[in-house]
Image (tube, rainbow, N blue to C red; front, side):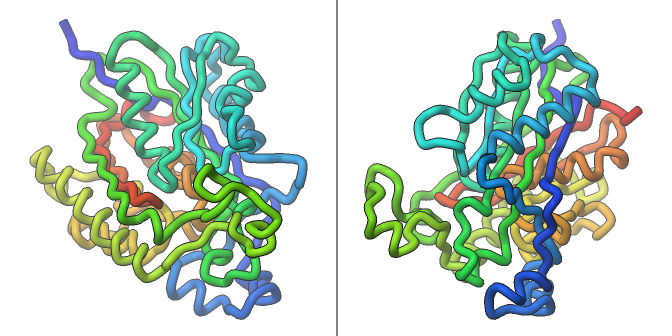
Length: 332
């Protein structure tokens, strides 16, 4: 009896039309294009300007793109995992609303939040459900409207983040393709270095917390950078060693798009040539839960069946890890 593995069989994505370039940011805060590009690799990011639309709008668009491209019936989707750090509302799960809106009324859905590692953790969860044999089609969506939590007077954070969404479909595979191994970790020491201080049960919303801008994302950039460089690189190196892979065996690195220097450090530790490192941070900035699927969507045309792909991410909490996956199809 063949062992069931969980493979990605389709991808989709969506980014808003409005482009917030470094040049535009120069008119908003004390910064400049050269400074941003040198330190982050970001040239522009997409922003959802509609005040009446939230993360669910991005997620729905990405899911619909996948459904159209893969020509699948939404009623066949068994479950939906919504990876996001910017849910529409604090209580009503965003994924549940998304499922209904895309017509996946036979699916159950829920949200998964692990900051910038949300999609990576979601890959592990989706694959486990498929490998269990209980579900055949699991839709994993990564979406964030980061502009909704960014303080555009804070030049340390407003230059980094953008809005976007991506989606992948996990299905059973009998050829040994799909998710092969994972190394996922977390450390609560990061709680103070990357956070939104107020709005939760610890510091409920008050007039004072709003006035003090405590509902915007805050980060200690130097500390987060240090942890991210070390842990993303360590996790990626470990996944190679554990699976007896050399740099020659790796076809592609799909890294979280937070900072080009972090991506470069991870690739360097893996001894990968630049052509194997997939980067689109210059176009979108850090879209948090959406970075990994946006990379998959942008570079899907390069992937060949059987390709060895290493995923790596690092996020607030701290959360981080790496996943080794074998690609399951050639794009038609």
